[in-house]
Structure formats: structure tokens, C-alpha cells
Length: 183
Image 1: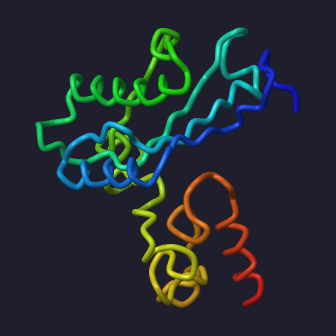
Image 2 (image 1 turned 90 degrees about the vertical axis):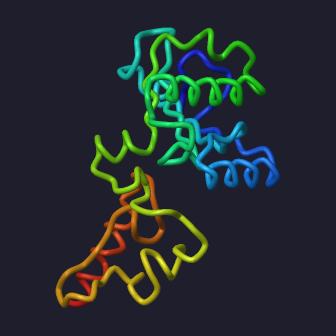
């Protein structure tokens, strides 16, 4: 697939340099602080779809991990959102110097914003934490990872079920197969 003026296919980029940075960031969030080197998943849809941005510009979605719902320093006000953007831009500039100078518009969403806008409790885009005890055959919880619920005839699918978050359609496909097998 051709990209829009790029010599490579950027599709998605993950920034998570090492386990020490991930652990340090996780611990900061546990204290109600913003970590300095957050995990990020960066997607550039405009590299493939010219309708989502004007020519020569790009649209980026930057999703991060380990951002506290409650800040020890106070509320998620404009200053806190700006600080989060500064942390993100600084992290990206380790690999793409000058990034922040190229940003024309931004929307910074913290967990409370995601909860309010999308009705996702705790601001979790995966409908809950993707912790080791809630993955694979334990997603969303042990004994209910087969798309069936405790209520006969009620099935579950979505980001809270295996294989987890993202807009892939796989949980729905898998749930449909279970439903069809029972008809």
C-alpha cells in the first residue's frame, strides 16, 4: 500500500524502550504521578487515508499506557493536560527531534476525559486493565473467557474479552462462532 509522501510505512509505532522505563512509569502512576517515559502506541491513519487530513499534513493518534486517573498534585486541569502533552512530546523527540514544533492542533485526553466522553469506567479503552491475571483464557475473568456469560443466552464480546482491546472485530467474530455453535 502506498504511503502519502513517506519513504516507509509508519502504520503504527510503539515506544517502550526498556523494562526499566516501563517499571518506573508504572510506579509513578501508582503514586498518582505522571511518569517521564510512558509507553506509547502511535498510529498515523493519514499515511494511508488522504481524507483524514489536508495534503502534506498528517493525523496522529497517540495512545499511552500508565496514566493516573487521580493525580496526587491536583485535578486534571488545563495545566495537567499540558504537562502530559509535554511528557509525550519529550518522549517522541528522543526519536523525532522537533516533533512538538510540528503539532498544529492537539487533544489530550486523560483517563477521566475518556471515561466522560466514551463512558468507559476508569478511562480504560480496553474496558478494564490488561493485567496478566486478565489475559487470554482469563479475559474478562477466569471461567468466563468463552464469550458466554453467567446468564443463559447472554453472550459477551468487545475490548473486555479475548483477545483484548483495539477495534479488530475479533471478539465479535469469536462470540458469533460460539453463538452459532449453540444454535
